[in-house]
Image (cartoon, rainbow, N blue to C red; front, side, top):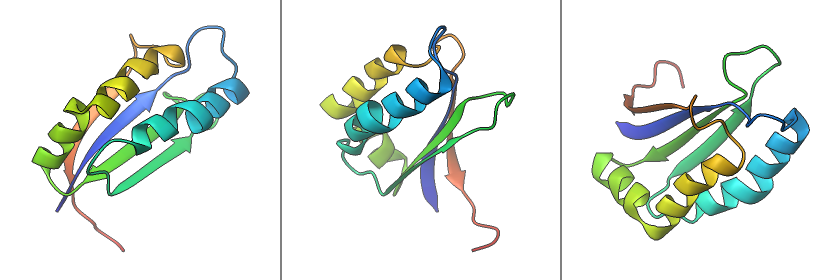
Length: 103
């Protein structure tokens, strides 16, 4: 089984969708890519009106690998960066073991 952390993010007030997506892909994602132990990292930008503007999933071999990544310098920097583009009062964060139903 794979352990993943899922984030639901809404853009910060005053930021349009285009700028939100640009910042995420060009500024934030490269920071998160520097975290150790990341096996896979995806982001999906939602249609207008969805509960979240983006859903990101970061995959790890196990919970220990995830914890080490979040506690790393790169993990702390990526976590702090969220405030630069997302509403930090409305962040979904879920750690889960993934079960593949259809592959």
